[in-house]
Length: 218
Image 1: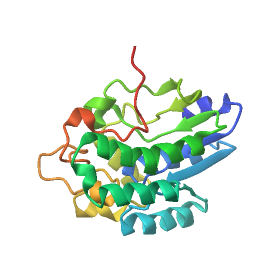
Image 2: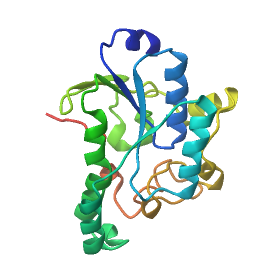
Image 3: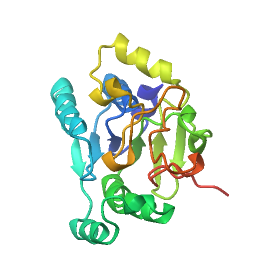
C-alpha cells in the first residue's frame, strides 16, 4: 500500500523521526517501498534524552541514511527559558503549548515547507486525540498529503514487526518508557497505564498533543 501511494506522489516527501518505536517501523516500511526523493528529519528541541541522541546515530549507521535536524530559533528559546525556567511549562497548559510551539511546531513548519507529502508513525490507538486518524489524510493547513501507514496498527503489531525484522529500538523502551518526548515532559509508565500516560503526565488526556498533529475540525 505504501509503495503504491508513494509512486503516485510528485514532489519531495518528508518522513518525521522522533525516536519512537513507531517511527523506526515507518522508516523501515518507507525504505523498503523504494521511495525516491525522501527527506528523513527530526526536530531537535534541545531537550532530548541523551539516549535519543545516541539512537539518532545508531539509526543513521544502521540504514546508512542522514536524519536532518531542524532546530528552534535560539533567541526564542532563550526568551522562553528566561521567562518559564525549566519547569514553568507545568504551571499551565498555555505555558506548555508555547514551549512546544517554539521548540517543535515552528521547526516543523520549516521542515515541511515545499514538501508534497509527510509520512508519520502515528497510530489511532495511541490516545483519544488520535482516535479518528486515517491512513491517508490531507493537511489543509500545510497543503500536503499526510500518510500514516501505522494508523490501524496496535502496539503489539509495532513491537512484533520490530522483533521480526531485528530493528534497533530506543533504549528508553527497556526502562519502562512507551512513548518518548522531551526529557522534562516524559517519564516511564507504571503498570496498567496507557502508552502515552508518561507524556505531560500532569495534564488531562484530551490535551496531550504538542501541536504537530492537531486535526482540523469543522
